[in-house]
Image (cartoon, rainbow, N blue to C red; front, side, top):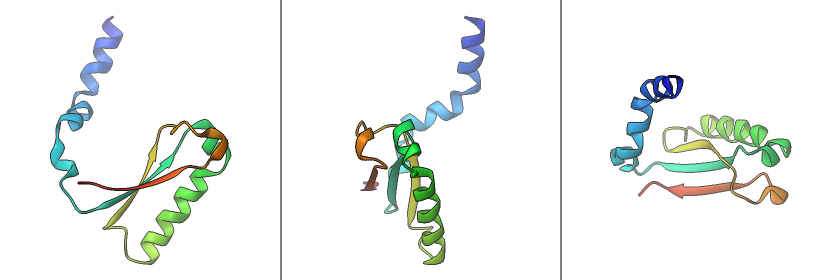
Length: 87
């Protein structure tokens, strides 16, 4: 239990983000790419790297974020990508 409490204490700042909705108050777009095992084996990391490079090249990195997520649940169809607006 002490080890779990120590982990909890070290992660308090990260956990506060869940309650801080101001991080969502932006017009920035988010491209969410699955980082689950199935999608990683289907080269989702390479997709993520390519998208980040293109966003930098086109000067759009300040308007669009590429975010690695957990599994979307469609492993056989990966790599999965979802574009969302943070509103």
